[in-house]
Length: 126
Image 1 (spheres, rainbow, N blue to C red):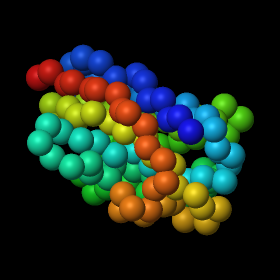
Image 2: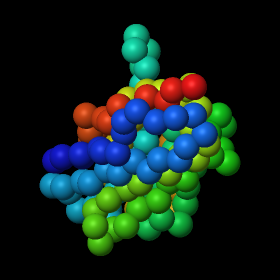
Image 3: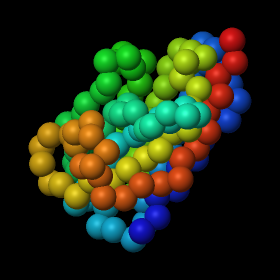
Image 4: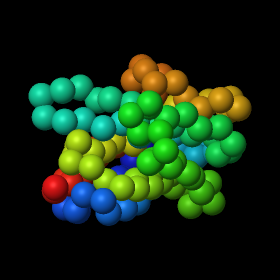
């Protein structure tokens, strides 16, 4: 199983950016997906999640209104659109897959996810 995140880099505050995560080795439509972010010396923090069909989403309070999670099952891909980037968005962003056909987006807890990717690094300069 592989979850390959991409799209990070060095960007300016106020810009927008779309992260991508392509998943292989699983039946993608049987999984909810999540994005977490991690800063040096700290654990992974939940950002957003989406259910298997895309009909249900969940966001962490600090990112509501700026982050949008989406998925395209035909491409086995999940995306994270980040608008109005802020320096505090600087982190390594990881995608994760949770086996579930629920109408609800996967929860915020790391233990709910079966597979993880390596992450893509995003740096936002002020």
